[in-house]
Amino acid sequence: MLSTKLRPSDPAAFPFSSTTAEYTSCHEVALTRTRGDQPQAPARPIRVSEETPIELVAEHFRKIARLYDYTIELNKSVSQDSFPIFRSILGDIYKVKISDGSQVAVKCVRCVSHEGDKSLKRAASELEAWRNLSHENIHQLRGFAIFRGKLAMISPWMANGNVIEYLDHHPGVDRYQICKQLAGVVTYLHDQDVVHGDLKGGNILVSDKGKIKLTDFGLSIMRQSRLDFSDTDLTRGTLRWQAPELMTATDQRSKEADVYALGMTMLEIVTGKPPFEELDFSNVRNLIAVADQGLRPKRPIMLLDMYSLVGGHFWQILESCWMHDPHQRATSQQVYARILVLSMQHRVQVAASYYEDH
Figure 1 (cartoon, rainbow, N blue to C red):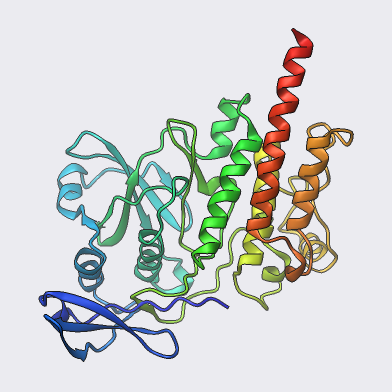
Figure 2 (tube, rainbow, N blue to C red; figure 1 turned 180 degrees about the vertical axis):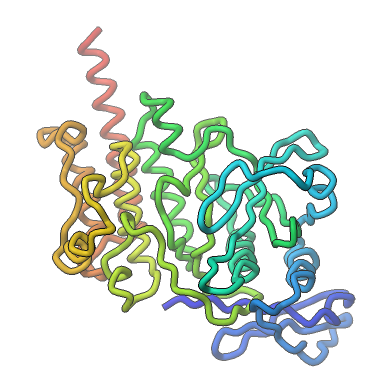
């Protein structure tokens, strides 16, 4: 199972000319101070917890991770009485115009009252996961800030919103191409030993050029990194997209669970509706039907014609993502390879229909 092991060095390590990472046998990371080629004693590891000073975490991202610090600029640009443009139970999003004229999204993680204030850990974890990723379909991280007492993430503002909103306003878009982009970026994550942990349409933004941008790495799990977090909650994502083994609370997030959510998200993209739309997930019986009895979404015949070659192949791909036994599911690499073929078949089918009509 992948685990998050993230450790910053003691503040005293920062003034030296270089910093290297020394990995222990259990994959914990201690930063080692060096002067030239002479390594110094490893700095005492600091764990990120509710009591960790936010300034220490910010110094890690500024000096070790070399992320741009927008703290001063945001405090000048945002009035104290401004409100977030989007609010959820886990965070607030502000839309801010900065000095270069561009608009950015400022994400502040919110704490859940019954858990105590874990917002710093959650924000630091997401920043650490996000900063190490580079792919054309991953939303760009521009930097961070201490904003209204919280560690905030700064990214470009996406005017098109999430992929479901985008498709609602652009119904003619090739949805199989969107699925291909999504399968490709999930394959990239898994090749990097990163588990996203919360794949769904709401976490996929769309650029001005129509490219998807995967975001929200708050539940991501990494093989290695330079911070270490005290025990965190076991939040597992959103129920309708969630693999059955996560609903039983016996397993943690995994690549196999990501593939299950990938299948649900691709169905959401093609239909424009959330998976299991007809089910009330506050009803325990429905959860049991999915988690223990193998209930899966019904095939939407109107959109996936049973006599359509492309529709049939697409449904087979989705079913390979939803196998009850996680080890029997397709890998993200296999899903991506099959979606590549399917998207080409779809283009040929569309072209043939066009010429028949003309």
